[in-house]
Length: 202
Image (cartoon, rainbow, N blue to C red; front, side, top):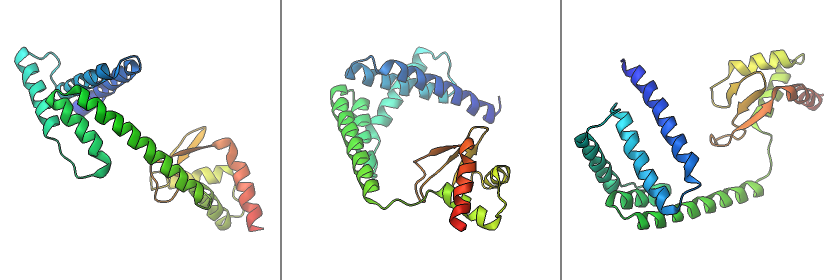
């Protein structure tokens, strides 16, 4: 098996393992979730190493290695501190302490989201990047239509704004400098966008 094939196989196993974990996480207690997460990490390491049917020795060595790495992991990134502490405690076997840090992580993430939403609400609204692209395209080509626009958008796909175009949607990053927020504009709405852009010019 080539390295590329091995990566494809690992990606499939990783998705299967994570999906299985997420599908049952909502029905478990906090302690059970942490235990299942520890097991998930162990199984991901086995998958990454290409071990499908580990011997007892391989299993013990992998679990020990995983615990040591989790216990030793350190980061200087402020947004990862709570994650680090939780993994450190899982590695040390202190699952109750890990739960405490995971709860702090959730609280921290909610606070960050609330602050970001508050900041966005205070900022003056500007046209998103897709609207700006359409406006520019119409100025360059006053006879712009939907077919021409789609061709134009396809030409700049994966260049920082347009992510993907299919038969139904244009996926894109609406805000400059923000590559976390993603919007999907219906293809059926492009004619209206073109009309508005033409009105702005005239």
